[in-house]
Length: 310
Image (cartoon, rainbow, N blue to C red; front, side, top):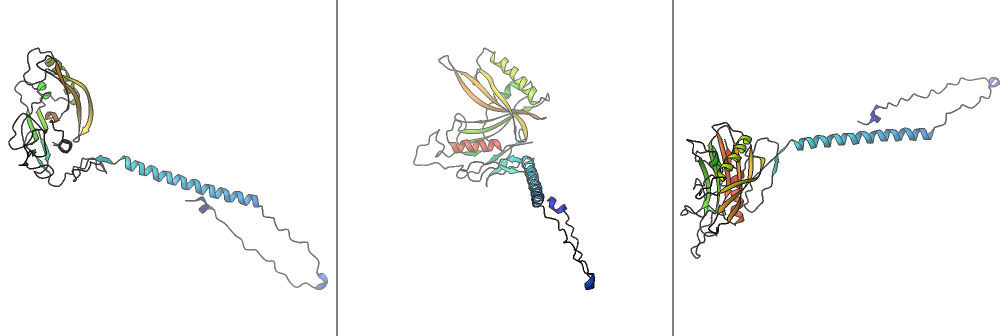
């Protein structure tokens, strides 16, 4: 509110003196009335102060509105909305909800095999997620365009390299996996897969105590000199970071896997793992596969990002 509203201008009616008839002989010449002069500098100064106060009030009101808008924006959360257009990049949208809101493309549905308390978002067996076999071409394992692969769930199994080191006596891991494969493919080459493995959290481990125990178990495993069959001969955690995903705090790990070859030299593969605990399970989650097809990779990542855990 401008301060000009607080200025009350009071005007008084000018009282015009009344004159009575005076006899001619009694008339005298009176001195002229002194009218006060208007002080122009003072009036200009008052107007300037009023305008200045109004501008300051407007500025403070504008800043207050901007601060309120900024606070509201900071309280909103970013949620991934999966695009219905497979060629369109996923753009985070702003929503005031603190809970994750998952929007899947048309035709996608959640599936569960009853293991590990997880549901998988699976695309339909139709274009662009499925391309039928081209009978005019010889199919190739590393060509995802004409071999007839689709996202099948549940499908296949993958050994949980890190999680297996935490298994205690009388425990066995459970697994849920989605694979991009043909009906005939059973083992060997994996184009792409999203795999969730779990074991019971019998000792009530937290993320930190689980990671500390895993480091110790890997060190013990690496010191074993005997042949380790299909596994790497050693696993070394290069780095890890805690992130918020699936409405949980999880650890993303970068791990160097050392594989011996016939020439005596080690082949080093750097792999990505996600590990975390809940009161019920200890989890290992991975996206794996040898495909170079970018659309297949993006679809695998959408499945990974939109997993639903208990």
